[in-house]
Length: 382
Ligand code: SF4
Ligand code: SF4
Image 1 (tube, rainbow, N blue to C red):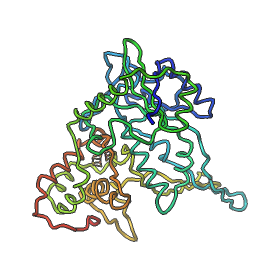
Image 2 (cartoon, helix red, strand yellow; image 1 turned 60 degrees about the vertical axis):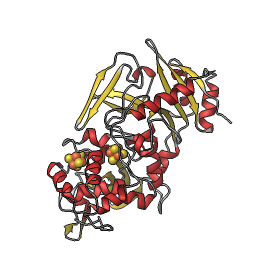
Image 3 (cartoon, rainbow, N blue to C red; image 1 turned 90 degrees about the horizontal axis):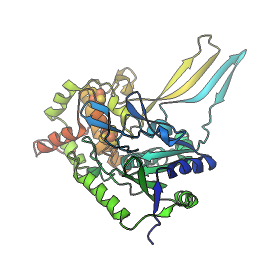
Image 4 (cartoon, rainbow, N blue to C red; image 1 turned 180 degrees about the vertical axis):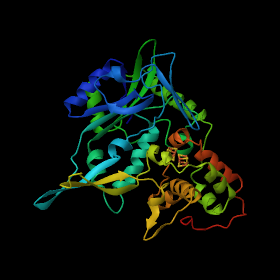
């Protein structure tokens, strides 16, 4: 049976926020801060970035004013839901010295947060994190506590940024699953209306309580067509199905050396990537030595210390680290988790200070992969 679809006016978003708060959720939304779009607690819809857009290109991210007042007329910024569901820093254990030493485990508490404005590629990123952190051999209790309390309100992309390639990765521009409510913005003269579609029982119940009108006939078709034209406008692409074979055939390709000469091994690409999940453990002592904390912090496969084992690092060069990162994203991840580790969000392209572009790298490898390189070569070494 076809799901009921609703017509929300911009002012209905305020009722939506109230409804979410009544249900115990802290709303979060995209906001303009420090010349970028960031996920922050949302007190009112006046905090959404009305009238702003973003322009992206390799090594470029800029905010610009739009000619209209679209609330969601920008694309992905440097952070993603990873920051809130799998935080950059989490305390695992505290130790206190007061004559004797007392250890206190920091059990994660479930927090209820509603995220408004999640793009289709970032829903796919949450599905990827779910696969790794909830559905593998062990469950990450910090992620689980955050994820259990998350309500996801998607916003479909009716246009694409130059760095987007979600269409080729099958993750966008339209949200197909993984959301509680999906909105499609229809920008009007000074304010917007939204097609609202429920994706879960919670989403359906929220929309019912808003007592919104049914969406006019034709809105759903228009939304689909807008998303399709956004997909058609994407100029970047990756063929994830052929990527593992291409990467295995090109282990010694000179392209890795060329890219390594540009790569700064800064790790920006892993920080902004919504699916990179690697962590390290750090101990921090108070200066008076009366307390200490064990922290879990984001790590990056671009650091030399990442593969340090008894006396040395396995990947000593930027070449081996870049090759490991790209191989993991597009090949090894598929073997491990049955899905690519890339959603085509384009963040790593915009936020790489050297302008290294994962789609260009794959295209270069693919173009000359031929039969020059042996298949089945391990990509785990230097
Ligand atoms: S590898 Fe790049 S394009 Fe793919 S999900 Fe990560 S940041 Fe986005
Ligand atoms: S690919 Fe770019 S963002 Fe990633 S480590 Fe190298 S220079 Fe930094």
